[in-house]
Length: 284
Ligand SMILES: C[C@](O)(CO)[C@H](O)COP(=O)(O)OP(=O)(O)OC[C@H]1O[C@@H](n2ccc(N)nc2=O)[C@H](O)[C@@H]1O
Ligand SMILES: Nc1ncnc2c1ncn2[C@@H]1O[C@H](COP(=O)(O)OP(=O)(O)OP(=O)(O)O)[C@@H](O)[C@H]1O
Image 1 (spheres, helix red, strand yellow):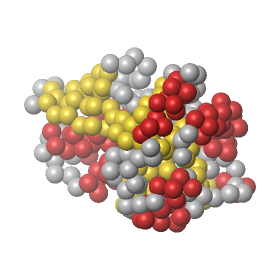
Image 2 (cartoon, protein in one colour; image 1 turned 180 degrees about the vertical axis):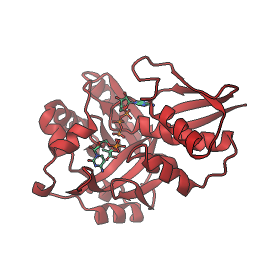
Image 3 (cartoon, rainbow, N blue to C red; image 1 turned 90 degrees about the vertical axis):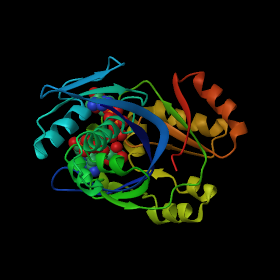
């Protein structure tokens, strides 16, 4: 039997860091939501007790470094499954972009194998397993819109954002999440975005207030290291996006746009100097 799972990309509408913890991670407060740019996973049981990963792209690891492999191994170990699986990753989400592509593949693998092998694992338990794989994985298991606290694994689901267009642009640079957090001076941050204001904006369904409440403290690191990300933000605003922010640790920048008529100018303007541009919708 073959099954399919979608693994959508996430964006951070808000990302605040409260402090650095003793375990090396940072205590965060984030508001995350999904967009309809997604990888597609195909999973098929194998007669031999093995995990095989393939993908149409050549630039991601296909061995135990792949987060989908790690998710399959974890579920097999914890639930004593002595069956194998073949997983094909049809990658559409740009890699190392700040869009949680690998985390979403891991989450989709957990959901998919739960179905394929009739394991009856609750969503809550899948989130606990997911947290062992990465801080963004629990959110990718549930999807929706949520405030994420702790190191990202404590989720509180909230109202979805008002529907709008999301323009994603990824400059051709690779940003390491560990490096960005490593360089952040958490106790010297002068400005913290307001989680409360963003939550209220979503609660009211106010597109304007949502745009005004966007904020990501990791921009202070990534924009300094890579001025081209700042230039990208400025270009998107100049071209007419209503609100602009870097997602996660970057380098992808997203622009929120309420009027469809504005999209051609923004898309064409960005494509003039940035190859990877996507126009998507929020997944509400
Ligand atoms: C930047 C975000 O993607 C925003 O959603 C997340 O905060 C990071 O999520 P992620 O990539 O799933 O993170 P992990 O794979 O768990 O951790 C990668 C590295 O980022 C740093 N890290 C991550 C999460 C966190 N709350 N504090 C951290 O300091 C740690 O150095 C860690 O070694
Ligand atoms: N299934 C996968 N898809 C993409 N990259 C993967 C996968 N598994 C492991 N990786 C590795 O993980 C690294 C980060 O890729 P990913 O696309 O998950 O980053 P990201 O979008 O910045 O994630 P996040 O937003 O959670 O920090 C890549 O350099 C890649 O080698």
